[in-house]
Length: 375
Image 1 (cartoon, rainbow, N blue to C red):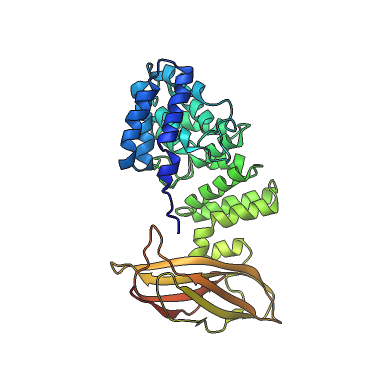
Image 2: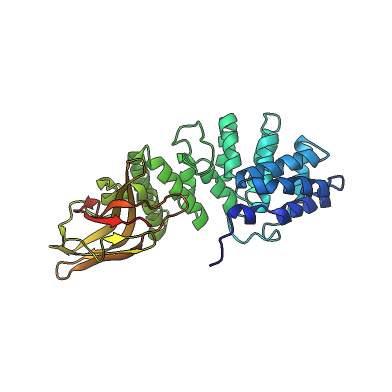
């Protein structure tokens, strides 16, 4: 089996640092590309990805012969003429350009340079998504940055429109928290939920999902208003709603199921859940099945829930999607799955007692126990 190469090694490596150096030197001959590349590359092995980005932007500041707006001008002129010319093949961008937006937030986050910095981030996000950098500006210059965000939401480029939603997410992963109210960007989302771009609509859905953690009723009200507006295709709206409510669905919140058309009190019953094996090891397959019956045709949304305890004794649940469909009174609906039990990079499968239960339209059915054996 080929070992997986860590993201940090492909995202920002010696070749990409050298490329940055060449591109900057091409527009600024006084930039010492060789020493920049050597000094930054020497530090890479000990650094994780975030630190590599910071170290690269620090190296740019060290070796650029100019500072402030003049330095920013050099970085912008060093960009290839279009993202496509730079080799960008997806909406998110190329990690080669992540240090550029980091440079902006580290060295141009001042009132004096604010307009130039925010304009630069809107352009840079087309080469590599700049939402993390924007959050520092939201904290330091909230009013001015939100005005820029509102403008970005109307930009002709879908990557800049997406930045308006993504940068203002209440719980953006791997990013600093912002001190603004969680629902501050709701007017921005109103501009974007019917966007033509899947990239933008996905960000809107994830933004609403963040908001659902603390204000689920507001999210439902917002979704209902958008549904009533008829401004987006049914399939696009359904995607947004499911993504926005996904954690609330896992938690069995009746209002989320009702909104999506799944009655929490639907007249359904399950046969006892059966397991093919009740003793398994890390990497084995947990095979389970049950049959759903109903007295009337009803839409059903099924999940399965695996419960255990952490090494410190705290309860832990993992909820997984199983199926969506329509149950009919004249036939049984099979709920079955072969689920591989496997440790991940973030969660280790610890030996001990486990249980599995099925959840239909938010209603939890009786669980069945199984054991994960020691290696």
